[in-house]
Every structure is written in structure tokens, then in C-alpha cells.
Length: 561
Figure 1 (cartoon, helix red, strand yellow):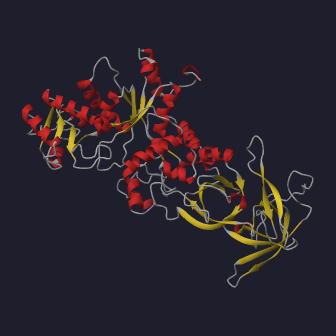
Figure 2 (cartoon, helix red, strand yellow):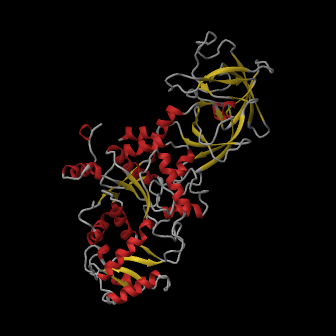
Figure 3 (cartoon, helix red, strand yellow):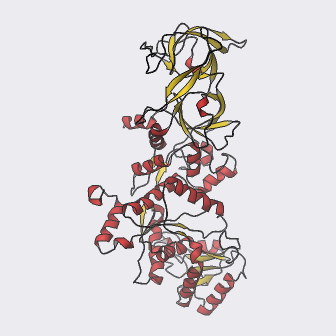
């Protein structure tokens, strides 16, 4: 589809205008620039889909660049996880780059700034610098070290680089405008001292560039045409451009920073700092806990890359931040899994059902449809025996007229099998039902062959043969937070809203077709929801995570609007 055949979002319109004004299509280059200080989350997914999507639409290269300028928080583990997530989403980058690739060039430019009187070494404490920076309505006050000589600044900066000073004793600041209405332009810090091991450069450096200094210059060095970021970076654009003005060669591509709005997701947090808190304080098991908003957590839960790409496409790109209901994401997941997930029978809250008139030594292998959405239908065999498990909630000792499942004297169809009639039940000393007894209609077999019955009853329930059932751990997940915006109120600790019932673990029984299932395999547990095999599964014990329920809450939300 050409750009003329579809509506453009405002970022695409900017690109189209640049192309009309002389930018060559061959000069287009985009980038996704994560900081390797945590795992990617659902918010990053939108940025990934945006940048790599533009690369696909315009047949332009996209760089993956790690902005690794803070060794105190960065690890190779995060680099590896980020690459894995992007590949899982289905995207490929042209060049793998790192801000650390440019440390020497950034340092050389900083020396030039000093030589040109555009930067100085400040020896104030961070508290003093913050105080003299002023307020949005009050101009800042110049540092007492702002007028140091070029020679003294060069000497101090060299010694900073050589590791002669402790952390916090000196910083290098750009000399811009302490009276600027933009606080970021009031002599921003270019370098600080950090005696930390860097995951790529080791101990080669003990001064590190600030993000604002490294980011635009990295874009320039990589010939990025459009540097797309979220709205909180809008005030940074003036500084981004000022830095470029000092170093740019008019013959080279000048990167253009443009901003789009975050699309926050309800009942989640996406701050890496807060996600790290959840991990470190044991509220979740790890970064890939299926309750987390991280892509690794969603992958483990059973979300598909197609669903997340469709979600990003559905919410689109906007200029104003807003809150997206998590039900829309769940809808996208459900819509994709409906097409690809095999249907199987599983019982997660079992009670035994005994077919009193079925032979005790007989096993009947019945045909069951794998997925009605398949273009060419396929089938599997499920064993039917005298003793079965059914869901405890599918039987009521006393039921009203709206209950169409099993009850004393009532009839239901067992999925893919026969119509049964409840003849009685057994209770233990505590009054709990331990067995349900029923008879089956021998002529009521379901299916598509000559043996199939046309007899109808109102209710159909699922079941599993006791003798053939595969025992499994079933992890039912709910939303991690009870509040739709858990971190919106800065006066309230976001952890106050952690849902104490976000994980419920049960032992269930599943039909034997899953015995060879592998981690990440998807299934629909009929009438229960979509599940996937967890990485904790072993040959001795299967573990299933609930991905999403069958109930479409998003459609209900839309119908109310």
C-alpha cells in the first residue's frame, strides 16, 4: 500500500514533507535506542513497532543502538534480553550500535568545547548546582567556576579522565545560558565521574557522557534521519539541536528529533525503576514473571508477537498521552490465539464423575476437533472411560432454571461424547461432593460420522478420563494491580495497589494429547481460557500459565461508550 492509499499519522506526514523538500529516500534511517538498564516493557513495544514499521514502510534501515552511558545500572543481561525481545517481535535491525562505540569521539568533541569556551569543569556539589540553577520562573546563577581558564579546564578534564578524582568532585558542563526559560539549557552536565566497570569498555573510562550529550551525537554519527522519542523529551529538543549546532558538518545528514505521546496501559506500571522494585522486593519472581508488563513476562504468559504488533497498530501514534484499557491488549491476544491455539479439554477444579452403565474395562477413543478456525479441519483422539473428571462448578445439587449444566435428574452432553443423566452423588463427612453418578445414553454419541446422534440438550460440559489424565500445575494469573493507574498518585506508594490474588495455583487434569507439549506451546482449555506451557515444565510435571480468558471484556467496554 502506498502512502497515497492510506491515512498518515503525524510522524509519517513529517517524513513525507521532508522527502518532498529534498531529503532523499536513500537518506532515511531510523533507530530504536534502549538503555540496557532493565527489560523492555509494553511501552517499548509501541516504539519498536513504530521505528521498525517505518523502516519496513519506507524500505529504510533501522539501527538498534544501546545508550549505554551509565555503567552503574547497565548489564549484559539486559542487552541480551532486549535483542531477544526485538527478534521475538519479528523485527531485524541493520546495525547493532552502542553509545560506548563513540566514547572517544564524544570526549574529543568535549575537549573542543572547552577549547572554544563552550564548556567548563564545575567543582560544586550537586546540591549547590541544583540550588544555583534557579526555577522555571527565576533565572539561575552562574557557577563560581564558570569562568575558569581554558588551560585549567583542560587540565582538570584530563585528570578527570585519568581517574585522579573521586566521584562527585567535578563535572563538565556546557556553557549555554543560565537565564534560559528552558531549565535544560542552563549549563547542562556533559560528563560525570563514575568509577564503575562498564559491560563493554571495562575500566577504560572513569568519566561517562550524560544521555542528552551522547544521544543526539550518536544519532548524528549513525546518519539517523529521524530521531523519534516520547513527549517527555520535547523540552530536550532545544538542547539536542544546540549540541548538534556545535559539531555538525553541513554536508552530513542532520537528525531531526520529533516526539509522540506515551500510550499508558491500565493496571500496569512501566517505569524500569518500579519494575525493578517489584523484582527486588519479591512481589514477583523475576523480570519475566507473567504478571509483569515486560515483553519477556508477556511472552512467558503466552502473549504472541502478532498480538502485540496488532495492539501497537490499533492504538496508533498520538500527540497526547492517554490511558489504554488493558482489555484491548487482551482482546488482541485472544483474537490471535483463537486462530492458532488447539482446543483441548482440561479440568482445573475436579470432581469425579462415574458413568454407572459404562463397562469398567472399556476405553473408547473419540474424535475431537482441534480448532474450528482451521481452513482444513484436523482432529485428534480422546479417551472415554467409566470414570471421568469434570469441573466442580459444572454440577449443582440445587440449581435454578438458568443453570444448564449437570444437576440431579438433569441431562447434559459431554463434549465430543455422549449425553448423560445424573442419577445421584456421594458426599464426605464434611458435606463435600466427592462423586457424581450418571448414566449415559448409548445412542447419543456426538460427532460427524454415521454413529453421531442428532439428539439435543441445552448444556455441554468438558471432561477428562481419570485413567488417562495428565496431572499438571495450573497457574491462573490476574492483573498485578487493582487500580487502573497504580502510579498516578505520587503521594501513594504504587505497591499499595498490588493485587494479593494476582496468582492462583491449582492442580488440574488434562487430556493425554498434551503429554508431549513443550514450553511456549499454546492451547485453549475449552470453556476455561487460553493457556501456554511454562518454562518450568519438565517431563515429570507440566506447568501451564493462563494467558487470557475466553470472555471478551473489551467488546463490552466498547458497547457501553
